[in-house]
Length: 124
Image (cartoon, rainbow, N blue to C red):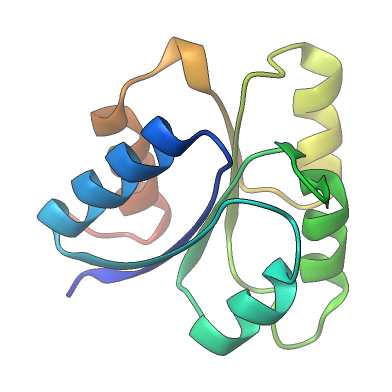
């Protein structure tokens, strides 16, 4: 196993595709399709990295990111925002709140996302 990835994504097709691709690559994955209870689920799984959508049912990714970075046990887990909010203001906000990377969904494919995860986790 290369590492543990927690995916927070409400778009079912993308969630399934990301999870399948990561499993093929050798990652253990856990998923959530809404903001409800996500921080607790992340705490229970203790992933090496989190992929985080911003627009979610029952909450938003910004609050999840803040909660993760405010938690002494979870703040060191790298977060990659994966969102369709592609403007520079949102990208800047993501970095300011502690996200390690910001990927605009429509601009990249699954292979790119996996490569970004591997780079952040220093996996060759």
